[in-house]
Image 1 (tube, rainbow, N blue to C red):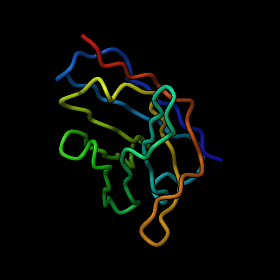
Image 2: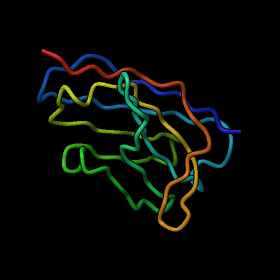
Image 3: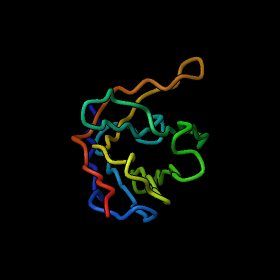
Length: 120
């Protein structure tokens, strides 16, 4: 089992930045692919970004060029740097751990989520 705890959410102004962190306990962190999903009110949960165990990254078109996913295996921590935030980035952001198969990321373990609100 892998336990994931997100932090760093909050309120940001449009054009501002936030950095999310996800601390992992249990399991062998560096063998997992990791990712961030988000869910806005009334919308389906969507993949924001994922990173393989080797560091290869993948982003949704809506955040490409604005968000950066990274991982520190020694600290067992996943990050999401969010720049140039837009009101439509408002959502609950979920950290997850999983695997890649055929180029697709499959999350298995989930954190509890952290709220990000972008508003002036």
